[in-house]
Structure formats: C-alpha cells, structure tokens
Length: 410
Ligand code: AMP
Ligand code: MG
Image (cartoon, rainbow, N blue to C red; front, side, top):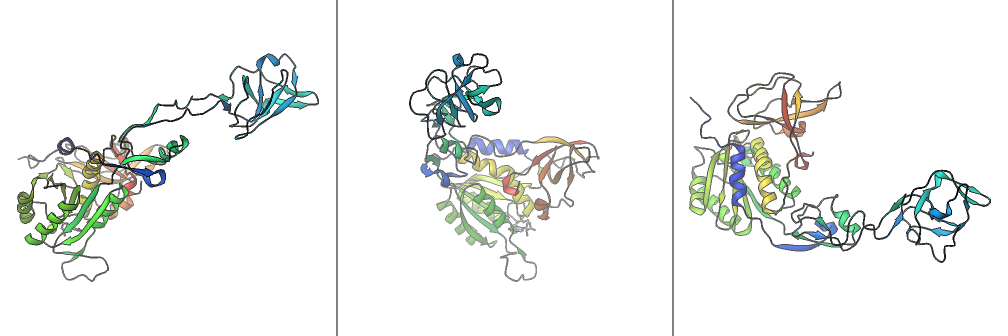
C-alpha cells in the first residue's frame, strides 16, 4: 500500500500558491539608508554618465603621444588631483602630473603610471611603451545616462544602494512594507519567562516567525498565543484579517485535532488543508481570507520554521513584487556519513557543510532530525535536500545541499 498517495509535492504546492498571488503595488519614496531590504517599485535609470568625465586610473603623468619621441623628457606643466582639475594652458612638449580619479586635461591621450617613469633634471622620462588611451577611464564606460541600473522588483542590499548613491540618487521608490499578522495556537503553549504547568511547553514558533518576517522587511502584527477555542480563534482570525496582507498561524493544521481551525477557516475564507510530500512539514494550510492571504504552519517548531523558509519566504517575495527567488542555489556535494531516510517525501535534513581534508566540500547531518529538535538550525548551516523516492544515503554518495540564507544566520 502506498502511504504517500495524496501528498502534494513541494513544487506543485509552491506553484499553486505563487500563481494565485498578485503582488501589491502601493509604494513609497525612501531615503537610501531607510530602503535597505526593500523592493524597488519601478525601474531606476541613471541620471548621469558614470564615470562623469574621462579620468586617470593611476597616479602618474598625462601625456600627448606626439610628445613621446624616443628618449623624450617632458617638463611638468601642472598638476591634476581628484576634485581639482588641471587649470590653464598645456604647452606642447610637456606633461601633467595626475592622480587617480582626477579629470584628464583636454587633449590627454594616455596616463603613464608613475612606476614607469623617472624624474630627471630636464623633465619626466618614460621608460615603457605608451599606448593610446591607457589608464584613462572613459566617461560613461560603466553606466550611460538613461540606462536602467535596477529593474523593478529588485531587493535592495549593500550591493544596490551604494550604486544609487554613486549616481547621486538620494531617494528610491519602494513597495510598501508587507503587513503580516502572526499568532500561535495551542492550549499547551506558555510564554518564555513564565513557569510551566504540567504538560505545557514554551511557544517557539511565534518568535521564529516574527524574527524571520522582520529580516524579510515585513511589518509584524504579533497577536500572541490563541487557545484551542473556537470563539477565540474566530476573533483572532478576524482581527488578523482586518489588518494584514498575510495571516500566519502555527499549530492546529494537522488532521484530527484541527477541527475548529478547519471549521472556522471554512467559514471565514477559502482554505486548502494540504499534506505536503516534504519532511519536516507535512501539514500546511494555504488560502484566502476576506482581505488577506493565509498560511497555516505546522505546530512542530522545526516543521514551522522549515515550511516558513521553503514556502512562505517565496510567497512573501512574490507578494512584495520581488522578481528573483530569495533561496540560495542548491548544489551537489558528497555525504561524509550515512543519512537515514525512507522513500516517500522530499527531506530537508539540517546539515553541516564543511571543507574536507582534501579541500572538497562535504556534508554531515546535525544529528537527530526530529521535528522538535530546533537546535538543528543553529548547529547546521544548510539543508540537505534528499529526493522524494530516495532511501538512506551511504557515505560518499552525492547529495544536494542548500546553504541557509540570512534567515538562519547564513
Ligand atoms: P499541532 O499541529 O497543533 O498538533 O502541534 C504539533 C506539535 O507542535 C505539538 O507537539 C505541539 O505542542 C507543538 N507546538 C505547536 N505549536 C507550538 C509552538 N508555537 N511552539 C512550540 N511547539 C509547538
Ligand atoms: Mg495544537
């Protein structure tokens, strides 16, 4: 008997989610420092040529080629510094002392680096052949005025924002922050800092989800812990839906004990309760409330964090108008030990990617892979992604690894 029939593959679940969503388009103008982590609302074009003028790539001497007959010695007619161009006439048969970044004087055909020259009593002597255009950075060779420097939907990091600064741009149009309402469900949940009654456990998921949402630039509406009580759940769903673009709950979405959640969600919206063919993270709910989208994460903390990472992260990227997937690329390395697995689901084991003695990358798992072992995220630095139909992996076999991104400290 196939116990895995009816499980939805991750790709299919992602596709269903992403094709239904339409990105939000409301935007705001922000100063560069405030725009870190945000997504561009429109394409950004350059108002300038970069470089803005021909300038020296080296400290040395600006020359005209015609002045460089064999053995020529050229007196220095003046100096050009970055920010302080050479002024005045440049007589034939002379050169100009020039520093890196300084505008080259009109008529300058090459900059000869200082190391290839010699100071003599009669002027500068040039000890190496000089080619037309050498060591001159040309106006516009990096970016042309009017060229698109960033597409709409680009997430702004320390790679992009300084580029805008270099173009003299002080403000950038970005998509408004996504508002995400978060709560945990479960009669057994207690706040850290409070004593535990018998059978209680501390709420892990809400902090995990809150932190990951903040890292993704979302505004978090944290609605606390909600008891397994139909009226409390209904009230919380309504409050959440009234304020948020996305509502994220954890717990109560697996079969059997999820009855009220399911009943209430059926009443308030249109939600699919899925069994995903992934491990950890089988139970997952997705759908639409009156005003917002909804994702129901599994209760087990490892499953909640892993499904957030693999499903909610791409969903938020799409909703915020981001073009590219935020997940790092997956690549193959050898397993340095046996990895236990049964066929039927796509595994996201937590692994430690490291350099072996021979200089090649290899991976080991973090140990116990139970969906309650949250320490596997801090011990590990990657997911080991094991194909659905694969069984246990022997040492030396190739496996796919996906390094953690910044959400898990990568
Ligand atoms: P559930 O899906 O609600 O049945 O929860 C599955 C398992 O996850 C149970 O062992 C719960 O106690 C545990 N769990 C649910 N929510 C949380 C939470 N917020 N933090 C830690 N563990 C949780
Ligand atoms: Mg529960």
